[in-house]
Length: 351
Image (tube, rainbow, N blue to C red; front, side, top):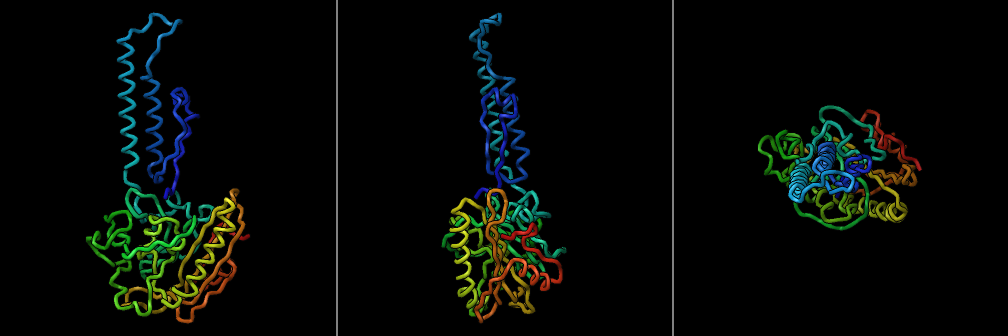
């Protein structure tokens, strides 16, 4: 999935206009944008400087065939060198996955680019989730490193599917600042594995009661690559299996159907934020068991006007109940639960 598009308006550059270089859209990470645009415009500069001169009836003396040949060769070499530099720029590693701010990195997964207002502090880490170093960002997560569970995952809903994966990754940079900047297996962490996040071993012996419960569910991904990216423990928390496989799953499917029919099929855009409320107990004395799971969605038209919204939550136990509420009511519940102001859509979405 392309998380951000680079648009270089070549028509605004008289040099590139003369060369008839088309406007470009390139799928890149935000840290690459200035570099790549600079390379593109450098290409245009070389094109002007080394553009072959054609004979003119108004200009004397007329250029010789040998001079024209040399000029053409120079022009070709400059284009080749700058194009190679452009390819290097595109392959340049993207910025780290654990970020200081979502802004300018992966804020496109939030309604109007505004992350939720919620808990702050050193224990909460912002993650721009991506599956590979070369891949684009897939969604955004706020992660609680003390409780070793996410606070929420935010994403664009772009369709639904039903793909699966059997293994779970982690976020290496949470434990090792020198770790790779994308979700990976536990073997990639050389120092401090599990110090600030859940690992697969934490779920040992819990399968009879708890699932690794997705916040961004597989059902809400429309391709295999997107689905695979949901299988990181930074996007999961212990969820009672009766609840996860029962009414919660049914509600996730209902929301997917509603947003597909009443939002995507009308050419609109859908944003979802799903999270948890921490509980008072842990699995294996390390990973917090949430008291509640919650989710909110917002559909906006092409003028950023809210057209459809809603929220729901459920207690994380065997009672297997989900309650639909307004986003305002959910904000009030989360504010009480976290003891600080909480607003899921900080730029309010009320349809």
